[in-house]
Image (cartoon, rainbow, N blue to C red; front, side, top):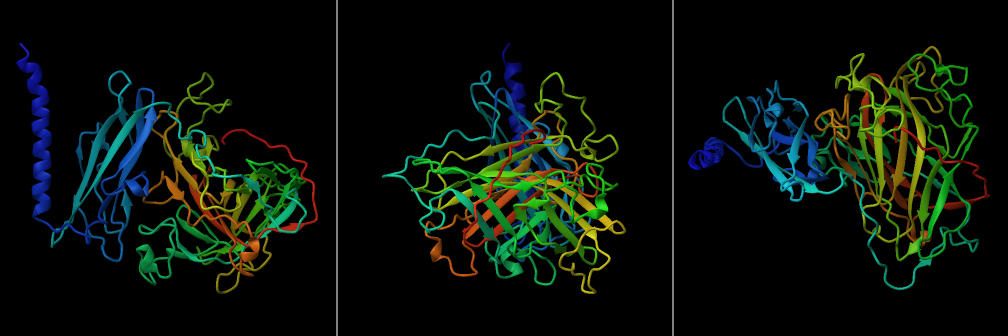
Length: 550
C-alpha cells in the first residue's frame, strides 16, 4: 500500500501549518510594529538578509550556515524589554539548538550553531530551508517580534572568492599619474591621514558605517551610547579605537604597469624587521624573546606605516600603538576608465588546519573544544584566514584606487603617565613596570574599493570562533564596509581641498590572539587620507611572506 507512505509527509505539513497558525494567532493578539522590531533577530548574517532576507552559499553536497539569535538590540524607536524564551520555527534541521532564555533587557545573543542545508537531486539542485525566530515580552502590554531567514545552498565549489572580473571598459584606457608633476608613475609617495566625517561604527544597529551627526542616526541615544564616531577609527570586539590624525603611509612603486591594467605593484618598506620594538620596551629587550603577556617584541626599525600613540577610552583611559613588523604589499590602480577589482574579503576559522594550512588533509590535528579554556580552540594562535580579492566587477566610483596590507603589532596597556582625564600622553611607550592589556598580530589590508570579513566553519567541526568575535550581538559577522565610505582618490588630486579627505580606505579582518581577554576577535578600520604626494625615491628590498593563518 502507498497510503502509509503518503500519510507521514502529510502529517508533517499539517504540523508545520498548525505551528504557523499558532504563531500567527499569538502575534495577532499582541503589539508587533516598528516599536518591537528590535526584540529578536538573527546573527551571523549580512545586514541585507535581516528581516526576511536570504543567505546563500555554495557546496558540493551541502552547506553549513553558522547563525545565532540575538535579542533586545534597542533603537530610539524600539525599547528593550524583559522577554520570554526565544522560540524557533521553520523547517531547518537543528533549529532547536538556537533556542535560549534571555535575562534582563541588555542585548543578549544565544548559542551559534551550524545549520546544515543539503543539496537536492544528488547535488544537482539547490536546497533551502527557513528559520523563524519569535519572542514575546513577559510584561504588559505584550509585545512580539518575529524574524524570518531563508538559507539556500547552491551547487558549486564552496569558496567565497568571486570569479574573474567581467567588466569591459569603454574607450581607450589611460594610466593616470598619481601626482601631476610630469615625473611618471614610478617613485615613492606618502599619504597622511586627516580628520574625516562621522560614521556609525560596528555596534550600530542602524545605518552601520553610514554618515551620522548624532547618536540617533545610528540607533543610539545621546549620552548613553557611543555609536557615531569621527574618522579615522578602528573597532575591535565592537569597541571604538579613535585613531589620531597624522597616520603616515609611505609606499614605493618600482615600475609602472602599462595600460590597460595600470595595476602598479606597491611596497611599504620595513628597514630591519628583526629590531626590538622601540615603542614597547616592556615586551622584552632580547629580540625574539617576548616578555609574558606579549606575542612578539620585534618590529621595523624604520617602518613605512606609522601611527602616533592614541587613547582607548576604557578603564579610565588606556594607551595603544600600532607597530609595523614586516614589509607591506599591495597595488595602486590608476586606470581611466577604471579596470581594477580590489575589494578584500577575509573569512576565518579558529580551528587548526595543521602545517599545510588546509583542512581535510592528513596533517589535520584532532578537533579541540570550541571554547577559550586551556585546551580550547580559542586559546591558541592556530587557525586559517581565507583571503579573496575582487568581487567580479570593476571598482567604482572612478578614480585612483589602492589596496595595501600592513602587517602590524597592536599593543594596548595602562600607562603610568596618563593624564587625570585619562588621556595617553603623546609619544607614550609601553614600559616594563606597566600593565599590558592585550597584544594582537594583525594584517590590516586597506582598500578604497571595500572590505568584508567574517568567521565561518570551514573545517566542518561546527566551530568557527571562540572568543569575542566582531561584536557581542554578532560574533561571526560578516561585516562589510562598502563604497561609501570607501572612496578612491580623484584622478586630479588638486581638486581635494587642503586638509580635507582625498580618499578613504577601509579594512576588515580577524586576529587569533591565543589568549584573553579577546581570544578570537574581529576588527574593522576606516582610514581617511589626504592626497598622495611624491617623496624622494626609496628602495623597498622586500620579499612577500605568505603562510598560515592567512
